[in-house]
Image (cartoon, rainbow, N blue to C red; front, top):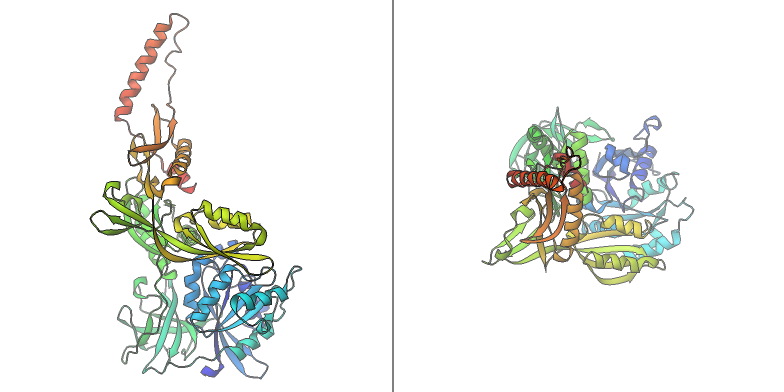
Length: 596
């Protein structure tokens, strides 16, 4: 199709504002999906996405729509995730588009992630079409949402389209607005074909299937193309688009979105954001998207050590589908061979673990998540450390810096005190508060990243009865009094339970871990001490009592000294046993503690 009749657009919104429902309606309205094949959350193909009601992967789909002017247009839609951990998926999708539909829930208004996604779209110079969704809800407040659009995002309120994706209201207006307001794609004017890789997945029969957006020239089977990042030349075997299942096409022209397969067998050859060009007359690289740096690290180990190679292969395939996930091999005394993995946040970590379990049938165990610390040594060397096992001795450390995030929390007015208390509890500082409208405020604060890893998002939701939302961005490092907390079982350190914490919180954390370990470590023939220690100083202790045989059972009455003699003999035996006995912590105990 000629470029004047092509429109590339993306859907952006805060989590749960109705992106996926709207994309279902668009597919139905344009006749891409027959009514009999229609189902909810059609583009969310993973079980995980359907269960949690969230989008994890960006999904491309090509639709054909006959507009009111009688012309037929090709609409390429990329449905994007809304959660803060998947912002990299959004930035990749936006780089392949000329326009974006900005969805705002009429009942909840503009939220933290809405603001972040609008900034991403503006950075790419996209045409933004605001859509106020869920107008059929009883507590929808359209006038208020329009005021927020103008005040917070500086988008004129009268340009917004009122719609309800569930009821099918306003869908036609949205399609017409896409044709009118989204500019058609323009060729870059380079000497030969240029296409941007924005996603890929692994197919057992076809090898690596790469999602592309053609910016210049034509991509067709039989062409020899060059992957600029890896420098490899490959021959294109097949090209096609999605509707939403893949279907084969003769060629992809300027502005079209689809996929191509070639003889690419290994996931490492395709890099997200790479440019594909004609091998005979190579063109310059297209501006890709920024490199993503993992923020949270955790060790992932196979429960059965024989599965190590399978886990390695599964991670390679998963990384192809999720370019923000990184991993490298490591070993642990307690857990054997495994991988040190980097993630963008806790939801990302949870999703990757769940996908390894479900899609690749791996039995895995993950260590406590940590972040990357900067350690300045006394000899002037600066090290980056993400694993407590590699932290040098305290006397070699001049100072430690921890990563900080700038967080934006939007909450109703009445919860502002509780929110400030939560930020203070997490060692954060509120920079300033901003009144968004008569009901809500936005707190901007600086918080250490490791404090918001575990339960921060959940706490915000529970304090604000579900009305609070947050977004964050990385904001450098600051010097902090961090210490390594070791867990000792029978005076031996267990590396899987070590962690780096702030000195003020070390004792509380140590007590909680020691109490949990006491529950799961089986009784031995002798007393086992579980201690939490910072360097040589023990800050918490629990004791697992000994299993003991009743040696005085055979003494009926008689002198007490006879019983005492038997008990002393037993005590001597236990002391000798303890001096060369080791406590084998079962795998289940590790799993229980790491789950907690």
